Image (cartoon, rainbow, N blue to C red):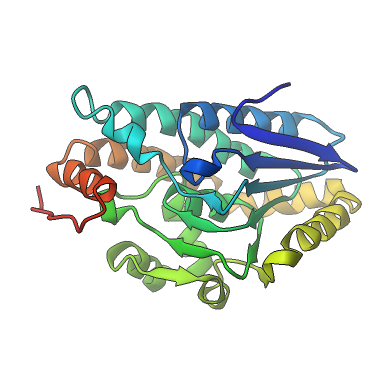
Length: 263
């Protein structure tokens, strides 16, 4: 299978999915979302693949949804790109969780919005020390998707999850480690080597047992995840119909502080 928007590599039982829109901070548009979902399905079905790594090309892991794409629909239906993206990306999130093999997020750089949700959905998160994070949803008048309301509170706790949504701080790799959002922080130069070592170890491990472990852990939240994905989808669609969303996107692209009216 060939891809236009990701780099897909497979070696020694490890598959690497590299988001490949570096000039756009690997933000999620239709092409990237579709390729990402297809690559995950391939990894899910191929028994020769025993561990999966998700990372980004360039200086970003994933900046979330493509704001320029959202803006391009303002004179049509502002909710349409969100509807299309979430439909595909939710399939990807379900595939990550249902895959009976370990999935590692190699967080190589800037991460925000849906990129944070994507990383949180993985089984392990290994982070470059220079990586920076921001939740960013409320900055454009949005509410969170792709399982954010399940994964992030489970990792960082209820109170910190509210802080990330309401206060929306920018934070660094050390803070992410301290909060439990990531499992490991390494020097930038050591990220690829460290991730490869962990992924190879997992790929050479008891894959069937890992699958059962993952299934057992998933069972505690799988029904909740499916419910929350639908609630988040509706929340994003409703959010896209607000004046604050239009203002938030415009302010982001114009590099100014948004003037939210609560409407």
